[in-house]
Image (cartoon, rainbow, N blue to C red):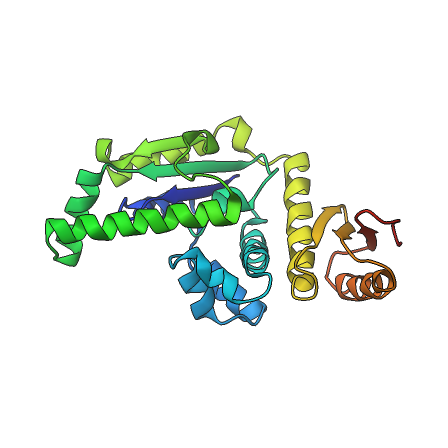
Length: 268
């Protein structure tokens, strides 16, 4: 049983591959649904989250703690979906949203420009020059986003366990390869990796609830014990600690909350 994340460039048939893998394995297939869930769960307009995946990164600078809030909401929604395993996720930045979970198979689907140009011209009925313009703009925006949000280049093959060139195989071939690799022992859930997933899920849930109040919070979890780190000075520290505990203690699964003021004494 595994979690499979599929990253893809524009017009590289990654969504088709993801759906075929899910069909073959009997897994759930999640994409934009996570964005919709985040918009409902955290009362953020879906159009803002949806556009955020493709528009210029400056859209995040229009509201306080934009980058931190965006990641917190999406990560909470994604971890909520995938924590039970048997999931293929092909939405925004799945490979970067599940750190420390060993049974995640991270896949990248690539295709050369010539292949993608052909797909665009046939699918959208546009000229070759227009197709090239569409692809270059999309590639540039995706690259800016991953650098803005995660400080990495999503084209770096070392970030993935498996990279497939869709120009060299069919969607069926790609899906069969992914299914085969997903059966490797290293991508099967263990008690340790499942605990890591559960802890990540809980930490993300708590952070999403706190992010409006304190965009700079760092949250970790270990078996129900949640540690929240943030910065506050003087008389603010006691009030912020109280508010953090009040919010975090109401998240299902939290048994204890410990607040640490970075650079100051811990306030438990």
